[in-house]
Image (cartoon, rainbow, N blue to C red; front, side):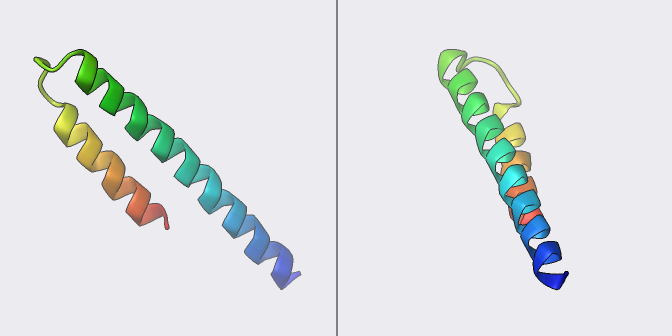
Length: 55
């Protein structure tokens, strides 16, 4: 039972990590496409913080 709990926690972490990584990459692409827009740096920082906190 404990092994199943650990596996579920690991799967949850990997899912969150995947989503944060995809979001971060999407915002980086937006930042390259529209460099004159403000706020992308703070969004990327918040996504990086969220990725670290989810681990």
